[in-house]
Amino acid sequence: MVATVNFSASGDNLIHAKIYEQAAARAVGDVQYSFDYCYQNLIPFYSGFDVNWINQETLCTDELVPSTYPCFSTPGDCARALYRAGIRVFSLSNNHTYDKGSNGIAATRRFWASMPEDVVTTGLWCGEEDYGSIPLQTVNGITIAYLSYTEHTNGIPRNNAMEANVIYTHQTDVMEQQVRKAAELADFVVVGTHWGVEDSHTITDAQRTLAQQLADWGTDVIVGTHPHVIQNAEWRTAADGRQVFVAYSLGNFLSTQNKKDQMIGAILSLQFQKSTAPDGTVTLGLVNPKLHPTVTHYGTNKSDVRTYLYRDYTPELAAAHGVRANSSDFSYEYIRSTAEKYIDPAFLDFS
Image 1 (cartoon, one colour):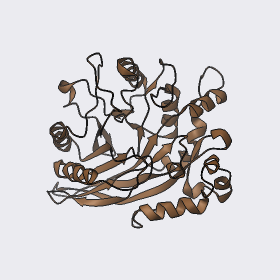
Image 2: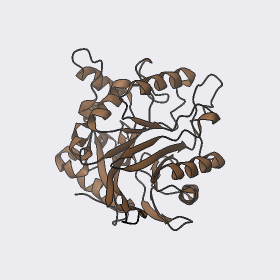
Image 3: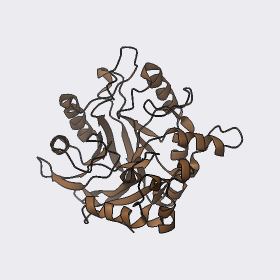
Image 4: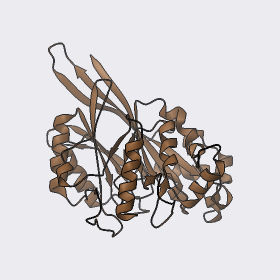
């Protein structure tokens, strides 16, 4: 018997003012913000997966006033729109997690507690006593554990008033304990890593070193975020011989940043397989990892912000992209050539 889970992971959902102002303008009825427009082009794609994961780069709350760079706060309606689009797993550990201090942590925890029961969050922990509480999700008879870590929090330290905290990537002893426990509890372990150099397509030695450590401890899939541009992916062999897949950076999923390469992201897809032989022997494996290029599109003055799969994008849309005000060479062909330049063809999927 073979059980399968089709899994996807999307990059940085980075909600600048133009995005939530657009959502406010589109709202009808009792809803204050309608973000559905931003994500509607992805709904058919996400519907083909059993699990969809995303890096929620900004705090979501129903309590705090929305704010933009450098300290973000995002209306909860954004996360509800992602939920309607098909996202169920939200990684909350990144450099903006502490942007609003203890009030932000408390408010976002109350918000996520209000979401439907099938939502899984990871990356916020209520102190050391909580580190053993590994988020788990069972789908189609396969159990997946989710962890996420960040390199830094923009120089904002945790204070004693914060009721929850992130775990930093330098806390390797804590990470090892969590990953090893997750591997005992689940069939597969997915780890989000918020790491690397912003606006760089180059994978650092520190990224590769941590990826190998995570693999050796028991991770099966590593989903990299933070650089805001795409980086390559690869298989790594763990100490026990398992093949572990690492996507070093999925780039931006949605934002209104200003650089042409920040408009180009990727969604990771793969399949988890669990085979059970007649004698009860279980074999686990990852199948067919692919990176599907995406485009954050906006018009003049960053209007009408939304995300497309490249396969659904057009030369006409690229020619009308607002980023061309700063980068006149941005084009449909440029998007494709950039993806081909930085992603191994074995993993690149334009279809």
